Every structure is written in structure tokens, then in C-alpha cells.
Length: 343
Image (cartoon, rainbow, N blue to C red; front, side):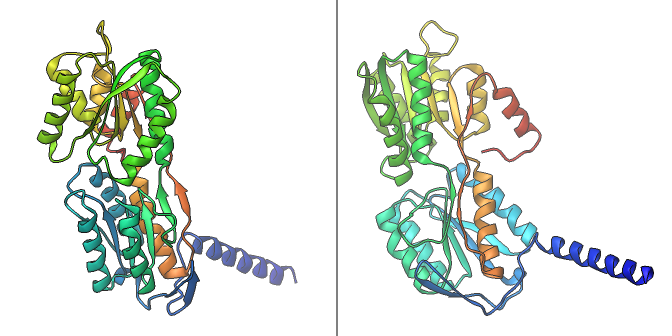
């Protein structure tokens, strides 16, 4: 009797291990019909290696896109799916819409996109959903489009953080230049709203110029230089996105505004490029706020993989806002040296 009981317990233990081990990956339920947000999806009868998941960024020529791509590539390898980054090559809504249209025609299994323009992108998102293609958002959301999930930062909060950093340095008074590589993009607008929620509390701080630094890095540099030459008495600069490391170059080249000088110019922006972190260390810019783009790319693929293979509903994942400043910059530079995905 004891021997039988021992065998039964052993079998139960093995079964439990099998159950627990199976929790790490989605269980295929090919052919199952799933309804979500008013749309109906038939899960594909495919092996994971045959699933095609497209992660769309607004402008794949921008350096930031590569940080998201690293997460996409890692998830593709881990889950054994055909997942890749694609997107437009400029900050144009029409170009991104065309990318999605092409993916719909191609009948990919899933799409996750970073939204450049909510009103402009919503119809094509809904077109893909009606075609039975599950769509999520990453990096920038369109929450009322019908998309199934989102992975990214709180843009308003991130904008507010940059303003708080600059205001602290300026002592609550002075002149500020604000800038962006795409001033009309929804991500830029949301961050700008966050910035203004802080600056509006300080009547002695004046925005003297709003710079739309579009184009390549040379054009961005020229736009910022022209603004600075017109307003050399500024004591602050806030980037809504894409311009802070260009501003750091400008300050270093002109040898003005260093944090260790008698007339510092406090500057803050987004994303953790190595060049920008070196600028923080050397005093040419003040703070940078990271949003974990690697995780955005990774989770974008993971959510769609789990939906396509198990019908698991995508959710909203906040990737956070992390501050890098002169006190902790060495830690982040070491992460980059170690090959860790930062961005």
C-alpha cells in the first residue's frame, strides 16, 4: 500500500512540474474565435515559426527606433516567431498609414504600432481590426481606436519631469527655449502638455521660442543654433523629444551653458543615448528621462504572440519614466558598456 501511495505521489509531483513548466509559454489553440473590443479574431492555425508580427515605428530612420527594434528581435528569438520592425522614413502620418495598409494587404498575423497622429491613424487601425488582424500600440497610444493593448510610458508625466528638472535648476525664473523633432506629433503634444502643466505655475519663467527641429541632424542643429543665437540669454532648454542631445552638442561646440560655469543653461529631454549620457556627465545637459524602449519592443511582440497562440488578451503596460542625472549617470554608462539594452 505504501509503495502504491509513493508511486501516486511521484506521478502527481511530475504532473505538477509539467503544469508549472507549461505556464511560461502560451498553449496553442488554433482555430479558436476570440472577441475583444467589438472585433472578432480567428486565431491562426500556424506554428509559432510561421506567425508574422509587424512592429511599426513612426520613423525608422531615427536612432530611437533601434532601441525598440532590439526588444522586438529578442522576443522574436525567444518565442520563435517571425517578428520584425518596419515603418515610415519620415514624420508623416500618410507614410505610416501606407505602411499599415500594406501590412493589411499582406495579411500579417498581428500588428503593433507607435502612433504618430491619433485622428490620422485611427481609421487604418480599425480597418486592420475589422480585417481580423489583432492590433496593439507601443510607445505612443491611441486608446480610443479599438486597439487591444498598449506598452509605453506616460507621456504627460515624462514631459512634466523634464520641466521640473529645468525649473529647479533655474530657480523658478528665466527664459526657456522648447523644442521637438516633430512638434505636431501626438507624443510631442502630450509631453508639451506635461511641460506646460509645470511651467504655468511659474509666472517668472518665459518661453521665448518653440523650435520644430525637423529633418536630419544637421537641420536640427541649425534650427536650434538659430534659436539660441536669437535668444543668447536663455537659462533653460526643454526637449519634447529628439533634440536634447543635439542641444548638448550645440552647447559643447559653443562652450557655453556648462553646469560648472558661472552661467549654466539647464536642459532636459528624453531617452538615454550614450552621447546624451556623456553630455550629462560633462555638464552640457542636465537630465534625461528613459522609457525602456527595449521593453516596449519586447512586450509588443510577446502580447501578440500570446494572443495569437492562446487567446490571451493584451493589456496596458506602463514602462515607466526613469531619471538620469549627474549623480547616477556613471551607473547608466556602465550598463551601456556592459551591453545592457538601455535607450
